[in-house]
Image (cartoon, one colour):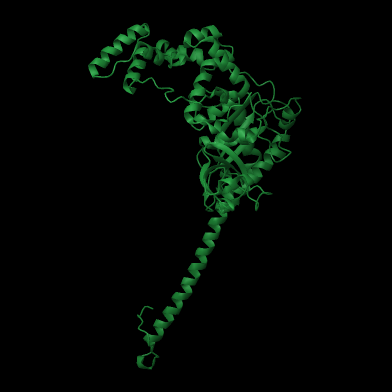
Length: 481
């Protein structure tokens, strides 16, 4: 059976349609509702629902993607009329579709709109999610009882539950411009072992792309053999911040069959484990570094690169090998000695949707693709010279980039100059800023020398009253020259 294309090659509309199908079959997959109940609520045939379930179980979210027809999703009904139909359905709980149809026809006559048919009203009613109807008909409390997570059990094995969170670190460090700033730390922790699966340091406020980059790092295998944590978690627990609820992060979670679990807005639950790690970072790591806020010392600050290297070393060789006060085990041993094999994606390209926002258009030249002063090559690029492609990359390691052409993955291009190294984009920006500052200093020195020469010439003219003895140039010159 031919595999469906990856999510990165699908349009946003196709991914959204696939997600709508998933939301309909999700109660069946999680054993919350029987197939007959879903048939009654959605009006979709049992055969169609079984087909969707089979496709999702085989291929994930991309199995629910289908090519749109020219009139897909269109009811040939004015947008204003569609909204009125939805409002009537949600506000009039006990009214039948026939009653709704009569009412909308009266509204259309009053506003000189084209009247929809009964079948069109019926089709639009089926696009409303059961959860939306539950909220409109029975109120917030009943909606929460049906759809909100009330209890969250403890993890029983590695990669069952991962948890993510952000915090500003209690330290001042130097950014790319050598200016002091307070960095943010994003962490993904395995709840069973308390091991760290991924992290990200930045001076920017937390965003969805930061969370996506950390999840990309957490799932895939690390270059360092001593950092073994990897795989696809069964559940990914976060709060309701916008940096955790991005659209493409939700799409990737569904495709990889990760159950996204959000805490109740304003009522975070189960955050003690990751808060305990942040406390360990303060007590065991940050307080011994220059720039620690609570020390109030005037010592020189370290750079973000140095802080990143020290934090990585602390996580892998210190924190992972300390006996945890709750589990009574070393995190790395609790994760790796459980006799399980992590569930991995088929390839790293399957995770590229997590890099969706880190995308840039670039032109293919005869010598490859040029980006950030580097040259990237791959034999597959030879047939695309002169074409514009989209590149996706991890800003923490730009030794390689993924190349897409017309929404399809083309190849992975590498930079020969740095292919044996891990190069952070921040390091390149920092080095460029340093070179720019050095050039400005050289220019300023040359300007000061030139000004001294001019000033000495002016003084010589002013000190010599007999200007006729000065040798005159045959060229006409101005005094300031």
